[in-house]
Length: 93
Length: 305
Image (cartoon, rainbow over all chains, first blue to last red; front, side):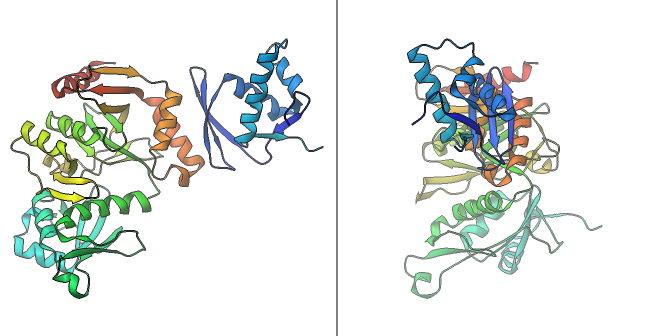
């Protein structure tokens, strides 16, 4: 269950190469060998997690905080999606 | 230094003899040792590869053999088998398809075994020092458009495989006959009555297939790389108005990666090569239905900065 209280980190050992144009980035994960098209928000999250793990609440502050219920769900969906792409993972307990 | 021999400089009987022993055929940066005694292939090579150099170096990047299968199939509904120096997935095909099979084998050799270039499933043509990459799925009219542009004076680098040198970012020419399928064969025949083509092979896995000889000038300039300038995703749509719509670079890069034969194998190096390519190119979606309009749209691109 993904909640805002869950702490995330970048998936260990991966190095992400990126090419960005006009608010969109193509990211290459050298561990999975996969290439992804990501928007600004996803890139901001990855950049923050590259420096230190953070939970959903902290990550929301990168975008000004004060998320409504619907925006919260969209934000959690973004975190779930990045997790499915194996770019981030929950921190071990 | 001995003068370069071309396929066309050899009398038919000598060509057949050399092919039976193993002919070292140079296509762009590759040398392929082709061994066959099948008339359809010998005729096709004589007709469509007349301008290509024959190497006496002894070295070959690829070795392929086209031969009849053993046993009764040599006589009853004759077939042709492909043999390589490495395992492949080619099954025997009807003998009438042998030249088309030869072309597919040549593509397969490059796309499955060359990793010093980033290889993209795309046609490439060049004019005025700037090259257009035309990636597209089968049925999109890529080869037809490529043939039309070549007929209009663009240089052919490839009908099928864009070879990107990761070091220089340049496109490496490997011009070979243009593969035309089904209705495209008649379209091109009507447009260019003098086109030198192979006889169509019917009922192949891809329908009817014929190959159009690459222009002599393109073959002669096979050692001249070209700078990529545009990535254009063509789509023929009957009745559609001409449309050239700019595509964001990141989306173009994703689509080009999907068309990469060895993008995944190259890993981070492939990503960087592809990123550099996209960086220096403008990308467009291109829909057309009228050939003259399509050619004019490409001419207009040449006039752009």
